[in-house]
Amino acid sequence: MGKYSIGIFDLDGTLTDPGAGIVSTIRSVIAELGGKAPRAEELKWCVGPPLREIFTRLLATAGREEQEGRAELAEAAGKKGGAELEGERGLEDTARTEETAESGRRDGLVVPAGKEERAKPQGTGGSAEMGGEGDSGQGQGKDELAAVAKTGESTAAGERDVVGRAEVVEKKERAESEGRGGWGAAAGTDESKAPSVGEAVGRASALYLQGYAESGAAESVAYQGVKQMLTELRKVARLFVVTSKNTATAERILGMCALKRYFEEVIGNGRLNDKSDMVRDLIDRERIERATAAMVGDREFDIRAGKNNGIFSIGVTYGYGSLAELEAAGADRLCESPAGSHGCS
Image (cartoon, rainbow, N blue to C red; front, side):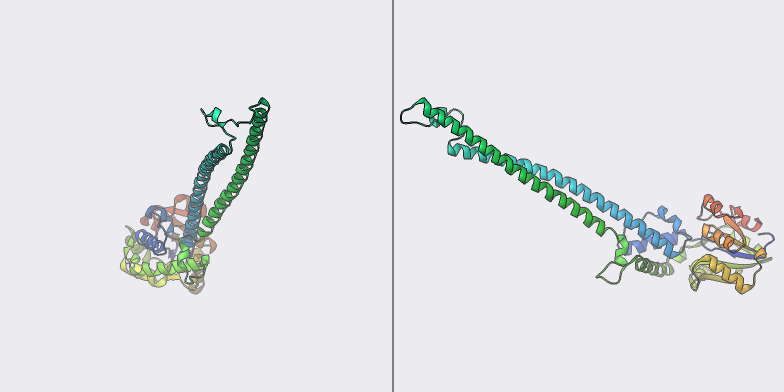
């Protein structure tokens, strides 16, 4: 930090590595709320952002994936239903044809093979004129039966198509409706209605804080070289921590990692939640001259907190933020190790 006499440090990803505890706690919360927890490597981005932002994004992603999955199932069910309808239609047509043929045999309109002589009508005089009239009557009867059968088939097919389409639409609408809430639907306290996004995020955040305090925080470890860096800096500068964690948890972690003694004050979320506002409040309370202060962190939130308050910003690349993220946020300097943070200016 060179010429700067005030050092403001982020905690997670800058002084300590909290990844294992944060990720395991988030996965436990999602599982407790009835969701399918993402793989650990998919949750690395959760180190750094405020809790409400983390769970808002996770809830949105889960709801979208569940809705898409249910829609796909509904579409597949619709296709299967259509195939089944076609099969049923074929069976019905076959049955109807057989029934018509049987009716014709009973009425003497259809002559079974090999029985032509017995099926012919026997007139009193056996004249050819009577035989001709019989043939004409048989042909007319066949035509009428075919017309009736065709009309019935068309009507039944149309009705089946309408019913089939209605069933598919109903399945899709039900799938979309059920998929809106994601695992957050289990986060409500009122069983008569699904919780709002705010209620679901609040419930998830509360469960996270409880779980992290009980076990997750204990998994944090100090980065190699941090103690040596702080020892040197403490000789020439006043040091502070500003973190998105609540103050009690942050102080506990610093104590477990033997880092708390290096800092005059630890500022966690509480009265203020936005990191820029927290840094501004610290500057105002301590009457810090901006030209003498530097902000050190591994995520865009830390760099923005420094830039928004007109102080020098140092991005560390050994944490959870990417080089591209820090550069895009406008970091004034980039350091690859805790030792480098001491020399960057």
